[in-house]
Image (cartoon, rainbow over all chains, first blue to last red; front, side):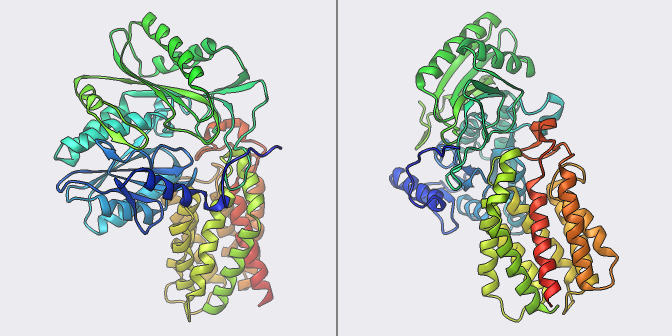
Length: 334
Length: 205
């Protein structure tokens, strides 16, 4: 098996070195606490409901790169593809807390769920209120009756954008939670993998795919999808992904949506835009209009090639938070 | 086995886990994302550091320190689960100066309950519980400390093999469904490595 080329120093120091570089790239807007992987904004106003996001590293710019104006107040960052430990989460939560409680927002994975839950128990003992929102947007992971078995993938970006705006404007943690839950409940995603990413520490790909194979529905860590098949043209792959997304919520004629085409790391912008073209044809046919489009690489999986499509159904409130300007290292919008 | 013995045993456990990092990663690559080995190595390297700073500790304190180190530094699902195993098990050792067969069986039994509560998984779902729960049951009937550990280690090995015929029902392997058949669960393998190291240590004392 050929190990992919990566520009690293000591592979076991990849995450701490990356975080050091990330803090510097934020030009003074964020800092790292003594608890490794706990990153916080430097300018959190008093009395603000705090938004803490987090998860394993290796998916940059999510989560560590999404700290900033109208986005997250802090991030708890784990090792590559591994949830952060409770102490990292607890330290970050205490540092972002401004007396109004802390909203935890992260992708629905067993490791993240357990570590954030342990941190929430520790914080409760210290009198800090937390609320938990788990993003479960991947329709390929489980049928609708088993929502809690669904993974969080690129929909994390929409969830952070909406929850970040709500946490900046709303005074009550219950209201922030309500808006974030509404966003989460109205988004659906599906991905496709073309080639694997690899773990810096082992140098090995996280899964194997034949030269002419793709896996539709595959998760961001190489979790099995719905179908392994021969590579087909962009339009055919897109058709295969959009249909189950539309069916699931379901999205219907007259709906207005935000559209996200997320590059898993190594695909090209050219491919993403070709996919976007086909998604728009399909949505036009269904009478679904796109309010805002986001095309880029936000939830990556190292050098994994492939992409995901996310739709979020909008109402006036979600549009308001989507429209708020936001600024961070990894995501900026006006 | 007194607290010093338990400390030496846990150091041997940590060295065994660290020595098997490649085997654990490979097992995880088959059904998960391939990071189980490096996560366990992080956790058990932290155990070695924590043990160094521990003097004249009771068996409970040693197990709790090990669990806390894993939970603080392991990360991922494995950090939370294996940290919970040792921290949860330690609670059953409260007030015991020495670890004997009964204490060891109580440790494993409390560990199983704590892990089930934290992770929400049950037996038969292709997780580390499929090695840990049979180990706890097997250790309950014993004539000596060494026998309790030996029976647990044997049951865990059988448990690892049994996971081959299970379909993953939780964790990152869940979406594989029937494709997870034929592969062992990496967490179960970790339990077996831990118990085998404990058995070898107990056999020497």
